[in-house]
Length: 351
Ligand code: TRP
Image (tube, rainbow, N blue to C red; front, side, top):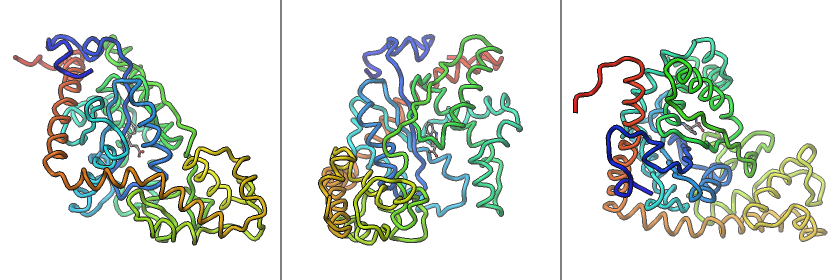
């Protein structure tokens, strides 16, 4: 249910506007092309559950500049990501799909929250420690305050549920802490969100080093399958996937990480249980199995590819969504922001 059907009084908060529908918020960075891991672990789950909530999905471009990258790449990746969200099946009639940087309230609330966050809390974040170690020449303040901006993303929309991978759990905990801290200090401002740690597809591993998670930025071009890879590329990458010297298709994460990873991908792509897959490929070689996995992934992504092509070529359609959804998001976000600004003592807006 969107503005137009909701109460338009400026005095009323997000909660009242949406008639107590539960809110879901999630987001992905636009730091590179989205991967099969992003699709299975995040996007596909969003699409499945989004209709049960009032849902907001953001392309968080402001988070992306914590690491230095090429300006034109970022802009292009943002557009691609948004088109992929739509092509994957998020429905712009029902859900809000927008760029973080188009909604100023994110940065504004992040400032206020950062004045309520202890440096010690941020220093403890494992993702900060990892990223700082990887970017020694650019340990900027944004890298440290990243989780505060993330908390602002979530709290602005009074989100009840936030689907995230397990690597984001600590950030969600901090978000909850900040929400509770603010509520204790100023009275009831924020909904305290529940993380929804998605289980399926959380461990889509590199096809080349199955001990590591599949990553956007892997240097080995065969390690990562991208959502937009074409058919031949996908088949080739699976064909080259690292397996083991045993010859049975059997699930055993510890001793057969490569095959187990492929089985998990195949299971998601076809809906078959691991035991069914073991039975189906009993006595067949790895070559045949790898081909089958590649083909299943191609088939799973084919409808997305088709929609993506149509969407990315329709400039007017995409631009309209970008504009109108930024307005939608602003409409909600500003209400939470003003409420917070009032509570912390800023002079009220004259309207
Ligand atoms: N930090 C998240 C990631 O790297 C992305 C993100 C930013 C996010 N803001 C969010 C996820 C809010 C969920 C909710 O994956």
